[in-house]
Length: 245
Image 1 (tube, rainbow, N blue to C red):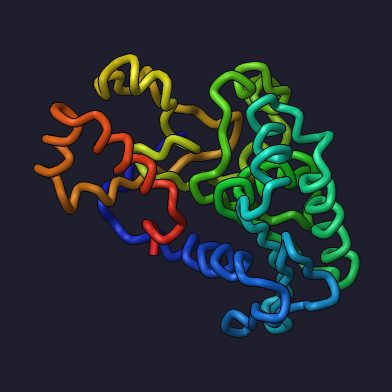
Image 2 (cartoon, rainbow, N blue to C red; image 1 turned 90 degrees about the vertical axis):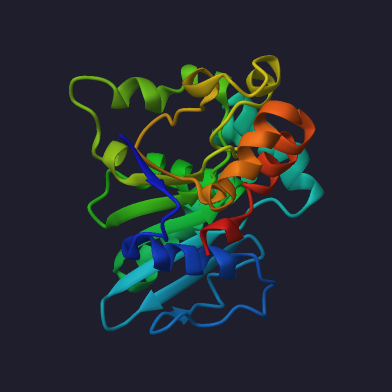
């Protein structure tokens, strides 16, 4: 299910996951508590932050996006080829999430932006059938048009009796984002007029699509039709986590 939100602010249910995703980009030692959620420095690492809330008995695991050569060359390539199951970042995130539940015994949710959003979705795919796994939320998550077509998750989630995990992931996207929402090659080939043909779909879960560029409606219309390079630049900016802030 894809819901169009236009130029609105984030749903309240997604705001906390956004705050955690922002924290995940900070270096170890610079992250902090988020409201009543206490940072667990022992379980957290350079790629992932873990928080727990004693009053609500919940745990949250947030995965940062690409910041290193390994992320861009290896992990992002694994998304493009649909080979996340062989990736150390993906395996490590699943292991950290499992350990977070074992340590506190609470329900666990996950989040992340870009690569981190895809890591969250992979974690949901692996652990989402457990009762204790609450949900995953990805902001402009890494997405491959080709790999998704052959995804095992896509196949089973479109079947007659889809597993529980299929309904536990939410992808939150900014319209025009080339990483999560729109295929760049298709956009170039169709001069920006490909519409839904150039849109990337998700293998499972629900999708919420925003379009904060509507603040500059006429500028966008002109750059789309007259200056392709500016349209590509604007769409490139759409990938930033801050567009949802």
